[in-house]
Every structure is written in structure tokens, then in C-alpha cells.
Image 1 (cartoon, rainbow, N blue to C red):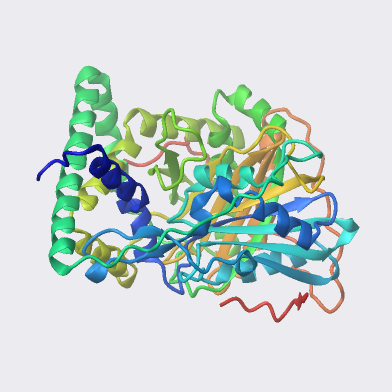
Image 2 (image 1 turned 30 degrees about the vertical axis):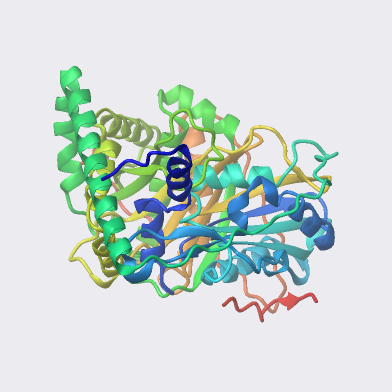
Length: 526
């Protein structure tokens, strides 16, 4: 391949490369369908109402900070290359920020229902892939904003960075009043068939070189530290082992339900220190014990059964969190459902995650992804499109649980303090429930997303999180008050029964692992 001779030609190629989606970014576009809406999201709750007009003006004044918010995805002919980001010549911010209302006084359940309806829809690919919903009618004079970004635009880390640009670190706010005139760049003409084929060949060669580099890097790392070879050998059986379907591992329909929970980081940190674990280990332990209760609620045994939870791993090194795109791998860990002692369970989780980290499980998964990325783009598109069409005898894993660090200091919008930030990670295929966790201002916020037909009782799992956390606190010797009871719903909306689980004998075992939106239900505000 001839190397461009002039700086201008080299700059042009670099600029085109910056607009081209990576193989991982493109995969989220290929995978998406009605049953698998692939947007990451957050429900932000503020201590006061958010003015729609002022919020719209505030975001409009900051769009120059995030040029991609004005760009649309352009697919190449025959998928011979990767999609690119191109300026939207008809961009209109009013097609991205909407005003909705729940019947006042709307409580947490009503806001959760609205979020579930919004998370059900696919983002419109004819416009930039993000949306905001300013919610009115909440009780106690609170306000809320629901934000959605397509996963091809950002992963959880980048998404938090993007959202933080739209918020302020003080009630006074930041001055973005100066107008920034935007002149959209013309979309380049579609390449000829010969150029598209040449681009596909070039992309495949780059993918092969990237896969080779990843393989050499992993090999050098293992050779430089022989103990890691043993760790990897110990992790590989778990990576290859099959798991059973749990009650929520069924084909998804696309309709979504969303609910949330929150915990104090200080309590999590105290338990972490007592057990010699990490915050993420505490999260996984609480979640696993809650899942055990949920499995028993559905009449299934947990004896000698495991849940394989996949944890996304950030691959960014020194880059700031606001860098766009997806730079993640995944670390699977299989955890037993039948360990009765909460503290023993936590120590077992810590041991298993440490084995997977030392065995560089996330690097192995990243290597497999780079091998897929070495295939020609048309084959990649066909591969990712076809994956959801296949039903495996046993699932590769049961659930995704992502933990994303957020701001440690309070954030504000229009002078209103952000008091809660509930994250959402996409789900679909046969993953009927997924969990996202985000830290913010001394708290951990859990967001549980579920397919409405596969797991209509996802709020029971949310309640089990609180039960499991209180048990872990007691086991660790930490006094924790009972969960705050939510205000009753109107009589016309039945309340879900309180979580009760029939007693089931659990043998004491060591915690080790085996080798277009429809919001007609809500009032729209003109």
C-alpha cells in the first residue's frame, strides 16, 4: 500500500480514521434489533424541578463540547467497510430533548415504569444516537432527566464522561453562553465498489495485525511471569465450562421493565475491609445471594448450581474517561448459589475474581474479539447479525453486571442538585435481566433492567438485594438500618407482594467455583 506523500494526505486519512467506528462499536449496530435495544442510559433524579426550556438551552450551549452529538451513522455499501460518523445536515436539538410527565404525584414506581417504556424503544438511526427526557410531575417537588446513548457511541466509562460534560460541579453552573456556530461538513460521496473492496482488504489487514499484536502481547506477558501461565491454566476451564439456564435466561421480546436500588459506599467499604475484598466483590456477593433467592422464588433449587456473571473491564489506560467509543473486554466469573454464610460467600467471590484477574481472563476474551475483528467487515456484520438467531443448548453466561465509577462530588443541573443516578446496561437475546452499578457522591446506585415478559417480577430481585445486603452487614458485624419503605401506590395500581421465600435446606459449602416509544400511559406535555 502506497504511503501518502504529503502531510495533507496523511491528515485526511487520520481524520477519516477518527470518524470510522471500531469493530466493537460496529458490532453493537449489527447486533441491535427490536428484541435487543442497545442503548446505555441513566435516570437522573434532582432535588428540584428541571425547567424544560432552560435545560434545552443549556444542552444546546454545550453541544460544541461533544461534536459526535451532531453526527449520524452512515453505513457503507454492502458492509464492505465499517460505518462512519458524519455530520447531520438537518440537526435539530428538539428532536433529541423531550418533555414528558407522569401523573402527579409520581413516585419511584411511576418513574421506573416510564423509564422502562423509554428503554424499550430503539434509537432512530436517521439522527444522532442520543436522547434526553425531562420528566415532570414527580412528588416532593423533584425533577428527573432520563438520558440514552447508543452503545456504538460510548461504553459505560465514556458515557459517564459524556454526561458529566452536560452537568455542573457547582449550583452556579458554568458559562457556556457564547454562541458556537456550527457548520456541518458535507457527507462524502459513497465510495465506488472498487474503493470499497480495497478499503475492506485494508481493514482486514489492520485487524490481522491488531490480533497478532494482542497475541504477542499476551504471550510476552505470560512468558515474563511464569506464575501467570499456571493462573491462566486455572482460569481456562472456567472460561470453557457450560452453565445452566436460570429462570430469566429465556428469549427476550424487547419490552423492558426497570427498577433500582441504592447503598452507601461507606457500608460497602467497611465490609470490603473486613473481608479483604474489593467493592466489586461485595457487589457480586450481594447480587449472587439475591439471585439465589430469586431462583428459589421460581421453584428451582440452588444446590450445586452456579451463576456465571460477566463483568465488563475497562481497557483504557491513560486516556481520559471522555474518550468516545468502546474500549472494554469482559471477565466471566462463575459463582455458587448455595453458600449459606454471607461472609464466606464474599471471601469465595474475592478468591474467584482474583483467580480470573491473575489468569488474565479479560485479556483472553479481548484476544478472541480481536480475532473476530480480523475478519473482513462483511463477515463481521454477518456474524454479529446471526448470533441472536442461534439458540445454544446451554447459555455462555447468565447475566452481565457492570460497575462504572461516577463523580465523587455532587453534580448540578440548572442549580438543582443531582441526588440519584440510576444506570442502565442493555439486555436481550436470552439475558432476561442485567444489572448496572454506578458510584456517585458516596452512594452506589443499582439499575436492574429486565425483559417484561421473561422477568416481570424483577422488582422482587431488587428487594432481595436489600435483604442480602442486610444479611451481609450482620455477618460482618455492621449495624445497618432497615430499608426505607416506599410510599404506597394509588389503589388503582396494585402493589407487588412483599418478598417471601420458602425455607430450603442449604448445605454449607466452601465458596469456590467449578473448573418508536409508546408513552401513551403517561401524559405528554406540549
